[in-house]
Amino acid sequence: MSPTVTLEPRTAAHAEELFAVLADPALYEFVEEDPPVSVEALRQRFLRSETRRSPDRLEQWLNWVVRDASGQVAGYVQATIEASAETNIAYVFGSAFWGRGIASTAVAAMLRILATEFDVKIFYVVAERANGRSIRLAERLGFSAAPPDVCMRRGVAPHDVMLQWLRPPPPGSPPRPP
Image 1 (cartoon, rainbow, N blue to C red):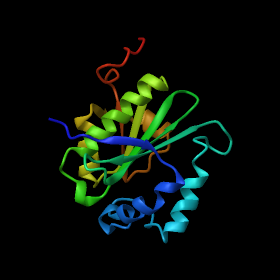
Image 2: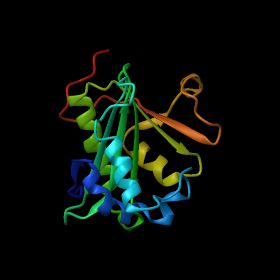
Image 3: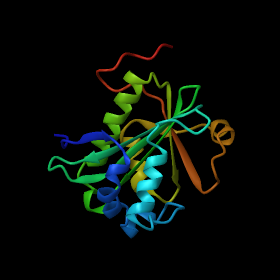
């Protein structure tokens, strides 16, 4: 049985709760960024993305805070939807929530939203090759290695791997046209 999760559109008001999760040093082993320096810096970062659009308005930036069944913030999921309906997704969960099925349930829920509400056609995940946990999560959800030409076109670094979703949208969403 899958754990219960709730996805909430992320706002600046979530900064304090997410700061505690994002301060976890275990999250940065495979990520080329530093933990947020303060709650206020995180609040400002979130405020800039509340429009849910890139500054040039060409991409949709969708971010959701993930809560577990108890209401505790476990992490977040996000998607960048391009005009082509190709979408990069990402996910970050505090190490205290690893191995509990929360990430796979939350990412699957996000994929359903993206397929049904935003008509996304192609999903991508990029992870550092050594980040087995993230790669296994994507593979469990139906992602597989993207072809080399796609990786080259999308500028994937040699130390990274790109996975794409080759399956139809999750159950309950309309089938993709051929």
